[in-house]
Figure: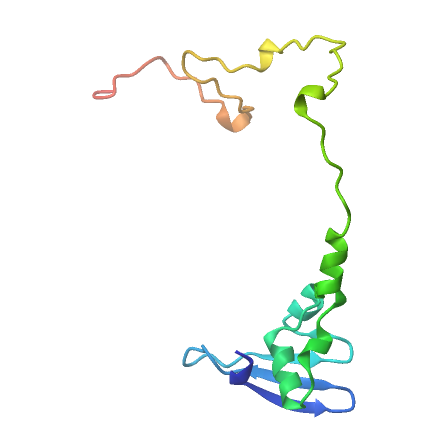
Length: 146
């Protein structure tokens, strides 16, 4: 994806670029462009600063000035950091039959008020307001002749 982008160097000493996407654009829609600042590790798409991993715009900017994009990968993604996470040893759990289970000191009693009513039409829990109050009529009217 980075190969299909156009890169303009704004300042080589400040490491700022303007990267324009050229692939996958529909006719009539102008191509999107993003500002990339390699020194501050920023891109306008915000993936670079969020993930701490170079986005396609950063890779395109690095390719333009012959920089290695791997230098912008955060230390979190290195193999050494991953291995350090898994170097801790976990204790072996004893057999399930040897576990000591403390006796319960209280009895669990279910609240019958929280149970559903299994029969009948469900009751509405909506709070009525003045909009729900109907004007009093003279009685029931026939649907055909009123």
